[in-house]
Every structure is written in C-alpha cells, then in structure tokens.
Length: 203
Ligand code: AMP
Ligand code: MG
Image (cartoon, rainbow, N blue to C red):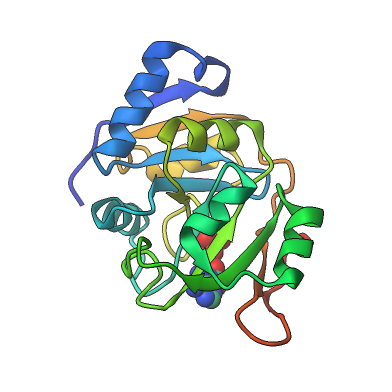
C-alpha cells in the first residue's frame, strides 16, 4: 500500500481542541486512527463509511470478508444499529457494558455490508477504556476497530508494537500506554434463541 503520513498524539493531549478537531476531520474523511482499548489496541475508522472500512482492511493487509466490531460510547446507541434486542441482551449489557463483551444482533440498514463482511448481523461493543470512549465521542460515529496489527501477527497491546507494525499505514496513532487486559473481547451471538459464545475472551 502507499505510505501514509502518521501523526502521533499522546493520550494525555486528546483534550486539546486542535487535536480533537484533527481527529474529527480524519474520521469524517474516512481515515484511520489507532487507539488503546482495555482489550487490545484497535485500528479505528467510521463503521458507517465503506471507504473507512476499506482503509482499515488495507492497513492490516486483511481479507475483507472478516466482519468488524462497532465500538460505541453509550449503551443506548445499540438501538441505532441493531434490531430485535432481547431481554437476555439487555441483561448482559447491564452487567458487562462498558467492558470486554461483544454482542451480535440483527443489523439495521444504516450499517453497511462492508463493515459486517456481507452478513445481516452486526457485532457491537461498548469498551471500558477512557481513551477509547473519548475517541469514539470525538468521532461522533461508531468506530470499527479490529486489532492494530498486520494480519496474521499477534494483536497489539502496546504502543511500541503498534508502531512497529503500522507506522506509515494509518493517519493517527494515539500513545495510550499498555492495554490493561491484553485479551480479546468475548463474542456472544444474541440472534439465536439460546445465546451462543462464538469466541471465548476475557469474560
Ligand atoms: P476483532 O478481531 O477483535 O475485531 O473481532 C472480530 C471478530 O468478531 C470476527 O473475527 C468475528 O469472529 C466476530 N464477529 C464480528 N462481527 C460478527 C458477526 N456479525 N457475526 C459473527 N461474528 C462476528
Ligand atoms: Mg487480532
């Protein structure tokens, strides 16, 4: 892929108006931003914009049929992107959100097929990391954010590892220290009568 100029921003400096404006502009234009979450670092982009989703896959060098997780910054946003949310799901959200739990729902039309790997379902997570929450709020849109590593390599949990893999492949990298958990989120399918754990994770 062509070289992208990567700008580095310290997590402590995302409250600066100039940085927030820059982050918002990058997201709005379909660009990519790497940020820490409590599980691993993610390569984020506007989950509702196919151009951003394409840029994420390109940065990772990953095949585009692998569905992405929508990261939201308030619980009620789940209703904007998902249909038929069960009482079981509401209970799980009450106990584990924000946190390392990803839930699969039927998707609403606003979520493009590019994001879900062609599926009619959508994966949603509300992360519990102050920097991740802040970035999603600044973006003002859900962020698709698969792990910040080149496809096939281990998921990055440190700023150093992120830079080694992806400097020159994304627009922004946030330096937010180490990811406290370091293990992927648990994925649970809520579209079946009995919920099914699709991927074991921290929970
Ligand atoms: P991650 O690599 O942590 O971003 O997680 C992405 C993983 O979440 C995918 O590889 C799938 O295992 C799972 N996933 C995401 N969206 C869906 C979906 N709509 N249906 C089933 N699994 C999904
Ligand atoms: Mg990964």
